[in-house]
Length: 45
Image (cartoon, one colour):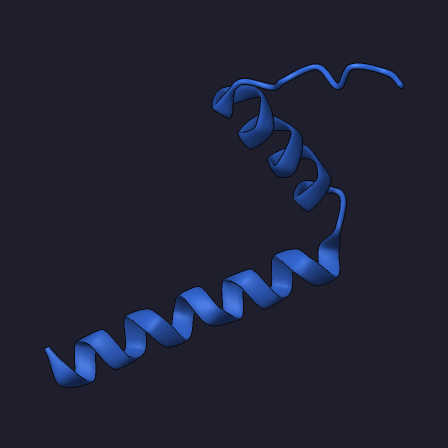
């Protein structure tokens, strides 16, 4: 059995960011959610 190298949090973050930047569909969903969150904060806050 291979020992899985433990990634630091920073490494995980950059790996995920790189994957997301290459995934346009995921980026669009995140942007949508982000915009909706800010719109609802403006309406209720």
